[in-house]
Length: 515
Image (cartoon, rainbow, N blue to C red):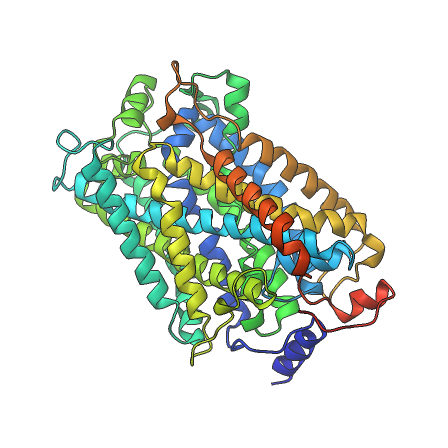
């Protein structure tokens, strides 16, 4: 009870009353974060991308590099969430760290970048699970790639229908009592880790052939039509997509007990678990891919099940057990989508609370769930998936869009944490004098990621629109729209979120009511 009172009191200092039900434990918050920073949700759908964009060598070399730099981002966000434990997350943090004068415009853009990043990440998770479920029907012989190839509207349509049904199911599960959502996220920890371990161990144990460790680290496969150095740069997408979304710990923070400690620990623990765990999982799965480059490329470009990872599992473990393992992984990806919708809806709720979107979404059901925000998130995620009807690179674009949107939104509060260091008061969880150094490294890394993930991923000759990386176009539309909205209307009335009392005192201003 004391923790609840302390959490509510701190939230009031940040400018808000306790509206959401604070009934999620720190472990459940960790479970939700781990489900979102999900290794199978990222690596399984992007396995084909990784194998054709540098192959096993690029995937294994880029993983620890991206992982360590992601931990730098996680530590920086952990320090900030400890100082400002509110559901607004990076949007709220940017407002406080930028200071009262810049707060409106900085928080406005940060919020919209985080908004579109959340949408891209959630849509990618649900779409990936739909692709895996449909691939099981191909692997089981119910459908075949001769009659219904992946370019056929039947395949595209059925994936989109399954995707929509998954999103609706996730939304329904997100409208139950918060404590049940907490139970689901706790279960997902064991399902996620157990499913990954079972899949990797089974594939390695049952496969008749294996690549040696030295073979995996030297197995380069560039099918992009671009130079090897260019290919090496864009190969980071697999790891970058895996290591993003950990700000979800913040979006659930107003429902989490002992928030200023539990939130940071959720972020850093998730990354600390996933970096080494994911590396060994990748090693296991890559050890059973075809050793002959021609065989590997034949599987990449014409998988019998429509999914390279499903072909790998079926070839290693046999059809029945291989499909069983894929279903377990697909369910863990659904857990990721459930958690993503939960965090996306809280972000919408916080954004609405401060007037950045319609106040209609600042609404709680009788169970203290932001139900209207939940359904808005599902609608947006469905729309974001529509480009898949006409572009075969749609999933890559979704992952790039979600990754870039979130990474840039992370970098803004971290940048101001360094630039306005004298105005930042650390919370109970901090890394002391190392904080500004780690934050500077994080900002530089985000700058690199932003450029790399917005450039073409293949070089079709002649140009083919269906192979174009549409992520920068989608991101550009959002930024142009947000800028037009700001210049025409929002700048006249949007004042940003309520600022922390301590922040206002540091800037020599008195606390005042927000809009």
